[in-house]
Length: 151
Image (cartoon, rainbow, N blue to C red):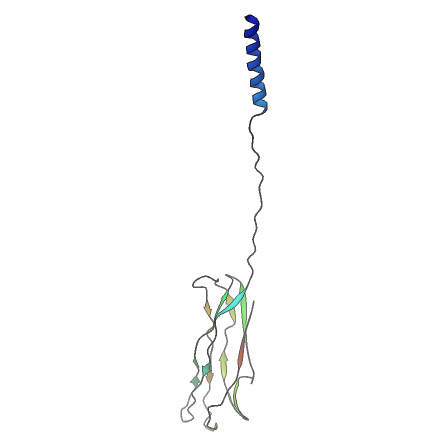
């Protein structure tokens, strides 16, 4: 009986040691996660036309009425610049007749993001100075301005 008891104790000891050798463990590797947000701009609202009503009997200056201000959306805090160029060097042309005007073009800023409220109105406009009392009558005076947003 002593022999059986000693064998039972030995078996319990062997199983205890073996169980400890196969204990569960864990490892915890890490994974780096990175992202890049691209700097980008888009036109959210297309600009409307600008119209001048010039009365040669009034002293002026005559301010432009802007149909719709252009709105852009750019990546938040991404810088952009604005350049405005004119087909007729900022002259309203009707045949050989011209009326010079100034065009308000914003310089640029930093984007406000693409989410709600992220659009930025460019606030364009124009003005014809006084002194066009001898301009020929007509509604065909025209020019085309290109607004370029660089980002």
